[in-house]
Image (cartoon, rainbow, N blue to C red):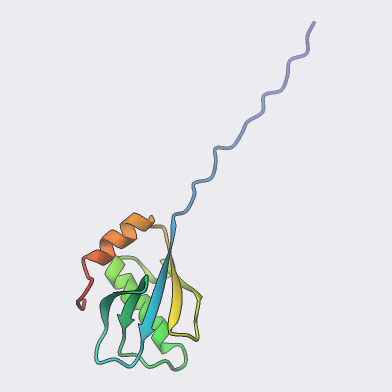
Length: 110
């Protein structure tokens, strides 16, 4: 009599999280907060916040969250925290969706 093989259960693959990296050139201490446009493959953003004690970085994440319609927890700065050239990671949105949302705001304020 043949032995019955135990059944093995495999877990379904974990869902992958969409992640988009946005290259940004930030100009702090501007007259207002606005998405200026694209420059050398980077989003050019002007903010009124000064680059002191992380104020400009916090303001950048808040501003991008408002433009994209996402919460602050989905955004993070992965490179350039102390530089004008930054990379912001948007979690939970595909790249095409991020750019579609940004295109609505290019050239003007929020």
